[in-house]
Length: 121
Image 1 (cartoon, helix red, strand yellow):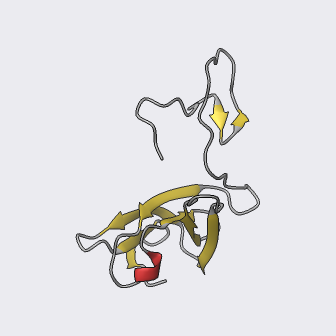
Image 2 (cartoon, one colour):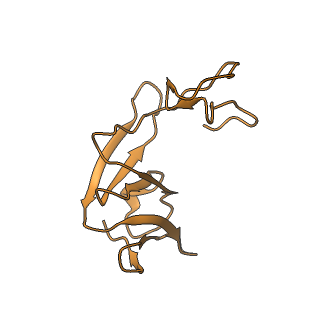
Image 3 (spheres, one colour):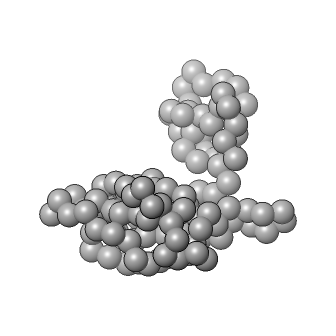
């Protein structure tokens, strides 16, 4: 959950780790999950899925990686259950952004050839 006016450490932190921390002070709110550099090179944020084509996916956060073309679903923690991350697709797309239709379905933008692709995971 995002806290209004919460200090997530922009510039001073990368995930839960100090990064460029010169002059940084305060108490930071750590992320619920960290993206490993072994997974890819440039995370591309996405959307929480609200569509109706994949009912089981509703409420999951869909994101990808520009360099690897992989797309994942992150299920947030519920109660004592930990965050779950599942790889959905291993593509050749250079994922530069995601988009959401009025119906809640998701699309990705492929920087390599300028295509808009509807996700069907």
